[in-house]
Length: 580
Image (cartoon, rainbow, N blue to C red; front, side):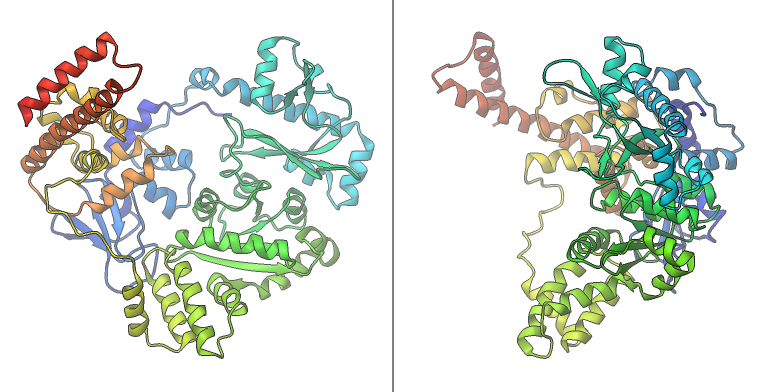
């Protein structure tokens, strides 16, 4: 297993990358003032709306909403995972990606990953000596080669089979607990989580085992048991079989999302290597991002019963915000009691391929489901249809797909597009009056405005004094603001894209990305510096007012103020008088 890519190398690579060169090697760009333009590579269009800003190191399409850094472009355009995109970017720049084996071993999650890897080997060896498990897999149509490709194993019965394979000490038990392989007894001690189950290793994008799924042989509940959430496993992000699919197929045109591990393995055994499964949970936005990074077309396969239809509807609602132009989603509903595994075993790969001819697109499914709940032969029914469909359409990002959905809704209810749009405008919630430029309405807006200036203009931080009192304010978002300032002070000259990439895979990333997209104004840096300085002073003043109000409130309570708080109250009171 390759070692970890040093963070310093990644940071330096992103800082040195020329986004115009990266995108221009794949898309024909034309200079337009300070920026470059092109027809968007992510959706079909006649008028160029795809803009690349070398100053920000960022691209944005005003048509479909696609956006990102040079690294993000490689991930979306080439459909690469993060480590692969780093490799490609380094290759373009003539650099060799270093691997830090020692850092990999010393990472906080390394012991957990080691335990999971060892457990996977133990389970695989156990399968070879357990004939009933082998017979069960054969009865399900799995070959030895197929089982080996997915690393399938077996957890024997008993309460401590796996425990006995590891050293009996507290440190090891902590690692096994952290990996979700064992659980604590109420009476003390530990026991194996997986017992008498076929074991399916779940791998991340790097091929590392991060969790397991276990299917019981014969009767018993639950039929499937998954690893709990751990430091290395988040079921809302991982997809079973995606690593194997990428390993088997050089180019994945489409992905088939099925419901179970056995479906994925069985389909692969019949030559269908593009199937993946969610891990006992509903499809999430993170799942969809990973799916679309691997392929442009995704088909969800569900049972045709009520539970399958409910799951499909949830998937549709989750998918709509991710439906950037150029992406395609379809739904395939099987007959009740049938699943992809039984279908390919009875009818072969052709049986599933024939079934896929009956899949419906996301738009067809949306309007079909809404139509089944409303009688569009009546005026009242058409009005109810529109009321139910419009909020769903509004979930889709602005672009051609959303426009076409709106056109179709207008056709179904018998209104012109213009009339439907006017009705939408009339019924929209009243917007607050826009604030004057330079005025800030709330503490959170103050901090947000400062962050927006900094993420778009990192150089402003180097050119103004950062007040020490800024660190004393206790306002929402301030830790992020201070972290941005710290990054810039340690890396003078960093571009907005480099600053943004420091937060990839962190909760703050989409919010910072949105702020980077939002600022399209061209204002001199000196003006931005003045705005930022003013913002800092307002944040400090706002923080002091908030703290003063807290002390006033506490002073009137039975407990009163401590000696230190009385001194703080006195100082804040003087500051309030001086600023009023």
